[in-house]
Amino acid sequence: MENSTKLNKAQIGLKSFTLTAVIFILIIGFSACERMPHIVQPTTPQVENQDTEISIGVALPLTGTLSPTGKLMKQGFALALDEINNTKGRHHRFTFIIEDDMGTPEGATRAFNKLIHEDGVSVILGPSTSSATQAAFPIAQENQIVAISPTSSARGLSAIGDFVFRVPIATDTIILKSNEALQAKLGYQQVATMYDDTDFFSIDLDMAWRETFAAQGIEVITTETFQSGDTDFLAQLTRIKTLKPDAVFVSALPPEKPGILIQRKNLDIAVPFFVSSLTNLEIQTAGPAAEGAITIGSWLSTDNTPGNQAFVQNYSETYGTVPNAFAMASYTAAHILAEAIANAQSTDAVAVRDALANLRGFDTVMGTFSFDANGDGHVTDIPNLVLIVKEGRLQVFE
Image 1: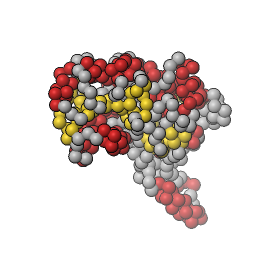
Image 2: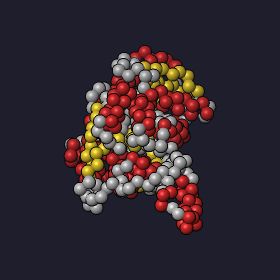
Image 3: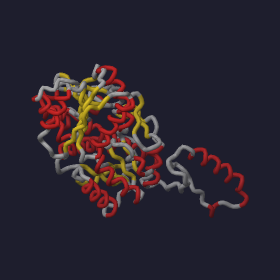
Image 4: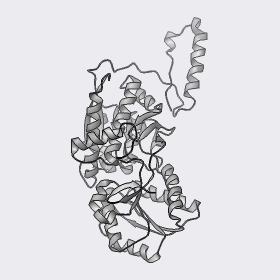
C-alpha cells in the first residue's frame, strides 16, 4: 500500500547526505509491502482541535427497491456519528453529507460526482451494493478520494485502486471457508444454483460457488437465473425440484429473497436451501418460509466481540429493533474511518488512505479488524460463518 514519504529536496544540503541516505533506507523498508510503489509527501495535519468539523460523504440507497436496507444503514451511520462526536479525546467532529445512490450504478455515479465536485469531500462512505461500487470506485480513484464500502463483497472491487477499501470479507475468501463447513455438515454431491443475472454481486457469488464446487468434485446439475424486480420464481424452482439436487444455492439481493423462500416452501423443496446474506429483515418478511434456510454470516447480535453488546443495546433503544448485519456494517465502517483519521491526524485523502492501509488489529463489533493488501476487510477469528434460521432468527449452524 502507500504509507511512504517524498523528501523535500529544497531542505537537503550536501552536509546532510548521510542522514538522507539513512532516511531513504527506512522509507524503502516501510514501503515494501504497500499498494503503491511511489513515495508521497507527508501531509500537514489538518485536524487541529476538538472543534474541527470534517465533512464525510455518504452514498446510500434511500429510494428504490433497496431503500429498506439503506434506511437501516443510515441508522447505523447515525449511531456511530453520535458516538464518534461524543468520544472524549477526539480531535475532530464528523458531519455527514448524505446522497441517495438508489442502489444503482447510475445513482452511485451521480452521488459520487456530486459529493466530490460540489461538496468537496475527501472521504466517502459507500456505496452499499457491488454493482454500484463497481461504477463508483473508479470515480473515487481517478479523483484520489478515499471511498469505503461497508457492504459490497464481489471479488476484485478493491483492486480498482489504492484509494478504495471495503469492510466485508471478499466473496472468494468466505465461500472457500463456508463450503468446507457446509459440505462437512451436509455431504452434498449434486447441487443446483440460482442467481440474479442482472446484479454484479449475485453473478460473482454464483460463479464463486460453481468454481468451488468444480474444484471439489461437486456436480452442479442446473443453474437457474432471474432478474432484479422479479416476483415469480416458480418455473426455476420447479425445474430445480424435478432434478432432486442434494442442496440449492441462491444468490440474490434483499428484495427477491423473501419471495424465493416463500415459493420454495409452497413447492415443498425439502433439501438444504442456501440463500446469500440473509438478515432479520428478509426473515421477518418471509415469515415461516424462512425457517431452515442457511446463509453465511460473520456477525450475530448475540456475539461477544468488542463493544457488540453495547452497540446492540444502544441501537435497540434508539430505533426500537435489534440491528441487522447492514446496520452493523455501516456502524463499523464509520468507526473504522474515525480511527484512521485519528491515526492520520489529517483529513487529507492521501493521509487517510495511508492510515486505512496500515490499520491493524482494530477492535470492532465484527471482531479484530484489519485491511489486507488489497484493501479488503480481514477479521481475526470470525465468530460465525454458517448460520441457519431457527425459530425465526439466525443462529449458528451446528
